[in-house]
Image (cartoon, rainbow, N blue to C red; front, side, top):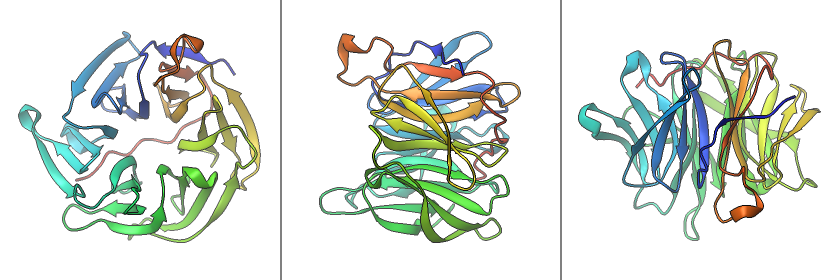
Length: 281
């Protein structure tokens, strides 16, 4: 498969690619720069919005009502005139927000990064009230994705070097029976962001390994695609037919040794992606 540069972004820490079907653009973030980007593959434009703290993920809301953001201190939605309305605030809890995803019913799930005093967790974020935690004791909660029939939810706690899977009830938004789906121990990298395709394949970015892996629904390694940037962070399907796999990467302190690090890449016609769902909140 060909890996092409979609956007020469040179991002310090590119993350969270998400296809916005309504605008036919790719949302992605530069976490350390506190910015959300909107890339238009049709004309190559990339617009940037800055926020006052690191932003780990940005997802579209229904009916064009702006974005929902996973920020360092919690979850917020964008309102008119660039204002934020907070849905969850964990600024005093010792954790920081990280990757996020929206299930097939429009619910938001967010993971957090632990501190020395507070373990991280993975939780559903309700429109009101406290996060509904499905898994605690995590260190770096990362990729979140669902099977095509929504009966499975996949998740990564990166330091474990595993992709885990839960049984998922789309009617209630409950995840249960966490278990190992695939183990990447023995590889150069650690699993980071991920997505799924229409055939049930699980695509995961391997941070520090410069690669994207696809696992079959039974957990068997199906293929590995090298990416010319070792800090490969996340992947998501997009494009007119949802067949192009977009990949974000980080540059951090790599310098001239990796001239392509920090760019947004695309793998055309990688597979058939799933229709993205906007946050209904």
